Amino acid sequence: MKIDIKFTPDVIVVPAMELPSKEIGAVVEFQGLVREMEGEDALEGLFYEVYEEMARNVLEGHLSELGGIHGCTAVEFIHRLGWVPVGEASLYIRVLSSHRVEGLRFLADSIDRLKLDVPIWKRV
Amino acid sequence: MKIDIKFTPDVIVVPAMELPSKEIGAVVEFQGLVREMEGEDALEGLFYEVYEEMARNVLEGHLSELGGIHGCTAVEFIHRLGWVPVGEASLYIRVLSSHRVEGLRFLADSIDRLKLDVPIWKRV
Image (cartoon, rainbow over all chains, first blue to last red):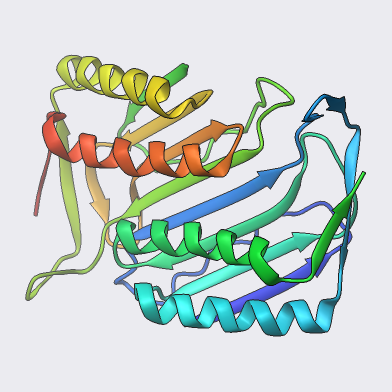
């Protein structure tokens, strides 16, 4: 599986799509946006920090394993760092696969694993 | 739930995103592309036809029901008609929701239902 991981302090720009083969039938994309209400508090944004070397290693392991489990072809993962205002994306993921079911499962599992043990923190 | 359904003979252009509230935390997008291999045959594309009035009604019913079940806020649905070459999208869906799980479930279910009984046909 082709894996691209990027951490950036800038607004996330959806990268141009390159199809690695004529057998890609499903493109699934996810954006995680910062919401205003966190419990009863109204936020103006969230501040994200990463332990980048470790995050990259753990994440690459997860994505590679999930790519094998679900049979996906490529994934692009972008996480924004620093201050992210309400309504903007802190996370972008794009998965390419032959069929939709694989791509959707890969996406769901990869976000679950991201929250599990990848060293990225957020604070108000 | 806000529902937009569009059928078009043109290349699908991803519409600009408008956030209806500050409580949207997940944007899930899907593109279904035409693949080259259909069993053992190499295609150059597929030709899509719709019985539009009925398709629109059935689809609106499904999306509205699923929006209630999963608690999503908005969906944009675009289906291309006529000739779609290999590597181009015949289908685009964008779902907005507060949380990712709801958006992913809505997307999976809405494509399943689309294939079930919405009068859209494809031929070589």
